[in-house]
Length: 289
Image (cartoon, rainbow, N blue to C red):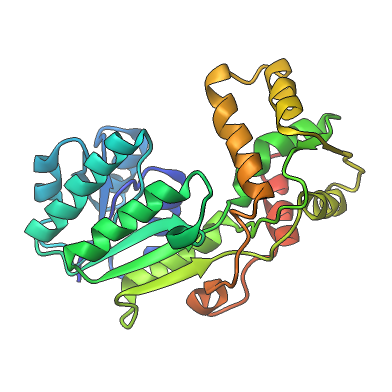
């Protein structure tokens, strides 16, 4: 069996490869990268892994890269709707032409009926995969704990936790758990045409901060504001203008329940209890001090 992971130099893809290595032979793992001269790509080669160029804007590279692949992990790309769907369609069509046996795709929480601003693009990409006729596994990942590290570092230097998310809840999840779950799916049978929701425990911003305080052993204050004030505070803190709309939309989406999970399949795919928020924060903060 040949398994290919696109985006293998990114944070999630790199961890998926790490979890695959003890499960299957090096010869069965192919890593897809945009730049095969990058440091991580060269490191993969040094460890005996086959590296193939997977440029989602260049279908020819995808047709070549996907040849002989049984299971394909298609990493989501970033950009506007037109760009993302062109890239994603290129990947799905190349997978079909190469006779790939299964596609695994990382989506977002409750993508089929979610108004969260990221959900529409993921929903369209899910549909493209399902309509291709290729057996699939959709992994609907919730919000990474790691997404909060920048804010946490600010809090560690005395800043408050600023939010306009109100009482909205998030099923924060530890990225290595998602990578391990993906690796388990890539090597196992019986997941064909399944959609899995992968989340942690639903928590409010205050509950997250309470847990953070336990780990830090200090009291980080939470400052609840409206969206306009949140944007002004970000601007005052030097956040680039281009990022402000996305950050405000994220808070609004959380407030409206866009990242609250109805259930999670993460324990099932891990065959163990998922990492708790406290455990994840402890590990992350120990490794960032």
